[in-house]
Length: 237
Image 1: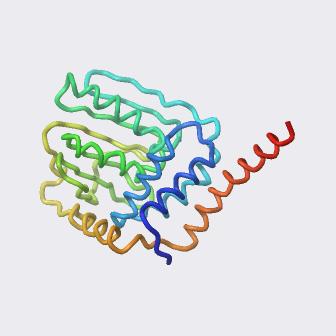
Image 2: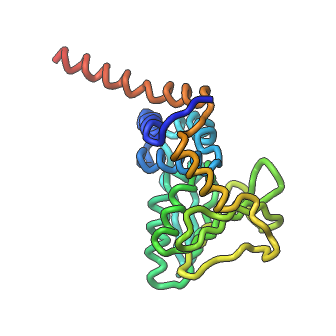
């Protein structure tokens, strides 16, 4: 394990994503999402490193298909990464709240759902409440995140039988607060726990695996190669 600062980690994640030349997503927004997850104790860096090889293959990723009927939005990402597209999709959902008290967005055929975390945190700071659900492909459990307006971090529940499709995510936005689907549920990971983890990370630094740091550096190093090649071409003109 190594210890790094918030700015060091954001900077390296930004460079790693920039180096992919991915057709969708803003590198600074994506880097902040990864670090938000990591600081909350939710292994954001490991998930990002795991996602990098498939993101690297999405050089001709298809644009999302989006159908809107009243307060319902149906999106297909054609197997693409959710966190590359989520900022634009959230903008669409927030616009629909002007005419409807609650908006539901169903995102089908998507990957990297945990990495949507940082973008959703922003909504609670804007006075919106959010409920996000998806089915875990590696277990029989469903994940339900409740982030009500004014909260810094969500309460995260492991639920049963929410009727969710694989490789999908259900996002609901409202001006009114949400409660868990099962009223008797106790958060598996509370917002308070995440807040304490983030506070400790700010004070003591962020501890991550050396192998993950080296993986990020490996991808980021492509930028140096590209800059060097451009410089050589420019010198020969």
